[in-house]
Length: 116
Length: 116
Image (cartoon, rainbow over the protein chains, first blue to last red):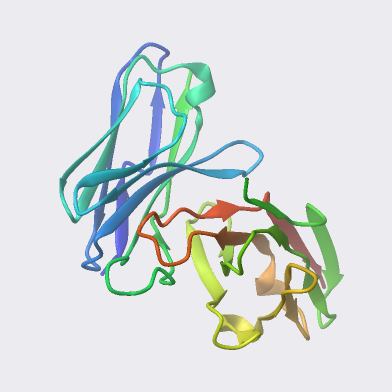
């Protein structure tokens, strides 16, 4: 069974469109994340949710809106897509509560978003 | 601000040679440190982590890393490279130990090429 899954794996769309990426984890973790990997492979955190509560919200345009319907899911909705949004988006999860914070984050396979 | 520096964006070695990937971090307190590997078109996989139990950490696939507080370094090594080690390697720091933020700061990655 896949621990952290994302759909779709590839997403090609036109500028100005709205799209969503879904993420699900079956590890029972209480914290989920979205990272963006740019064309130079630099990884940067975008959002973090702990028990459905937004914990980290980096300097990300308002066009990006995460939604966590439950602890196992964290979706990313992007409005009015721009060329610069083209990247690979990774979802991750970890167990934070009760672990002292040293548990590693498990990453999904990524979603390659291409905006034309 | 926290930062992670990976010296050398590209490292090339011959099969059977020593692999050394360098990572230096900046943190006011000893952080948690991680090495992740990313194979082409895949997500990140944890190689090993430092959580203050031991300064020499052994990971998967024969990799190990040594935490040196005086040098603020966490270099990754493998005695003998294998063709299958060719991938992108990321060093990551979690500076806020014990908090629930779960924020990871990544280095810019080192692409390892292994020549036959």
